[in-house]
Length: 381
Image (cartoon, rainbow, N blue to C red):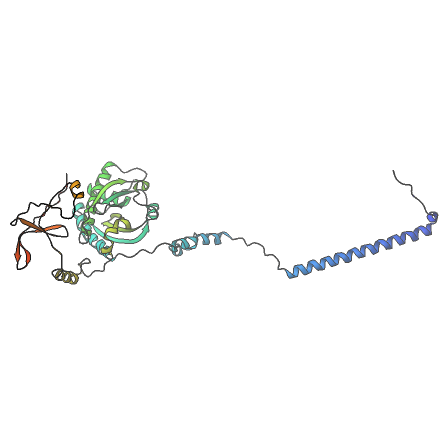
């Protein structure tokens, strides 16, 4: 319910009503001015806070060129040869592997041997040159192999480890063309998109055998090693011989047969070269391959003045363990040796001479009769 409206006596007077309205309007205007003043005070406070605290900067958005530069994907052709961006940061953390001076001599010897062997193998004018020799990781190498290619898994028998020999498609077709009587001065025909035939694989296998023989001969002055072909693969995943992060030496050789030819890559992990690492680290003079003749002569002379201890075995007796445990002070052990029996002279457990026992003044003495022949340990078949 609404309460009844009470009218003042002046309700019927127009002038009184007008004056009442003026008073109400003035009161409302005063209230609005006070509210506006309060709003101005709040605005001043907000302005002071805004001036005291720095304004927030809008987030900067990278454009596509800046993103490519950060990822190392942009730049000119000369700049692309050097790693940039994140790739440069990652590569900067790689281990700097030591140089192997003697390995360069081995490769130089390999070039000379292969030039002569491939000329005899192909009956053609063959030139073998060194393209690159760098350190790389196994995973990066497998990812960068240009397919189609033939990857040959090679075992270093004496070092008990493996390596890779990669023949690119140009050299495969050039070898087949030369060995099957192709015309000189014409490039070998390449047929892409098909696997290698049995004839092609057989001819490449013969080529690899020649290269492995020369590689073994190149290492001969440093260490006797035989490189043996284990298997041939066309898929890099089946030619895994090491972990992707392991380091290795990659040697790329260029083989030119007039207008034909290709490349052959020899990949040797550092783990494979570990047995001869000390020899490969040596500096060299001429063709001495790391041998120091001055030190060798000095060592030979000093060996003659080396003092060694020689033991005279006058007799031996084999006893059961029960009798050995029952031995006491004063126990008697009987030997089968006679005064004129032959005794044995040993040095560090190795039989050296047979001798006779005697006396020289107040001392026991032995007279060397003959040198003991050592039995050669043969391999059991």
